[in-house]
Length: 324
Image (tube, rainbow, N blue to C red; front, top):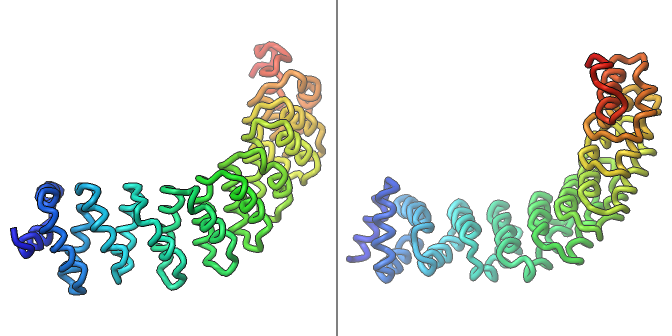
């Protein structure tokens, strides 16, 4: 079949069935398709733009060699939307042969954000060990677009080595609150004991989101130092933060955490008492029974209610006696 006929087939793609039919032909006639690609991607006409879109619709149906040919053409196209679609296909199909070119794409600060974003995620998902240094440099670069830095931080969650943990910990001191939040989120997801100290320091960050991600990261570690650090912090923070911390850590059901919550049952703040009593009801803790008993006559109705539930669930009394 002549190249012009291949171009006509591609231009006529309108349905999924037609797409499969054209892909089947192309897979068995790679030379004709290669020549057609030359014509499609060398032209800037509106018709050729549509043909580029149709070709990209085919990549999931083509063999690997032809898919790479399409993507190689598309990621150097002048239109950003074509580049983005090609990079999305690269990410989806985990193609790593184009990674050296993507390093150049990422380094080009004049390139569109969406294009560079996909370059970041492809490098991080296909060969994070080899490209971790580039991703770390991007995440740390204060001159870089903050949104791209955040994308690099996300990609670094796939590179859990000492250098990455060091970078993420360093980002908790960044001037940008968005970067600090992203760094805390990443460390929370990696949940490595090596990050305990920097997450404990992040508990004092001015951003509530940073503090919350730090709490989650420490909570989810099976580490006594992390949990004790949370317990110590819970005792010294403001009442509002105590309420938030209780809600975030109660599901851990750790002796250290439940003991810290029990100590807050003597708080002067009514909201702290409500939430602490509720938490003991959610995660029953028999050593809390004496403190819970004292709250069953509290002047606040909600405190009394949660205390009664916690008292029963922690083994203090038969539930029928309290008419719950």
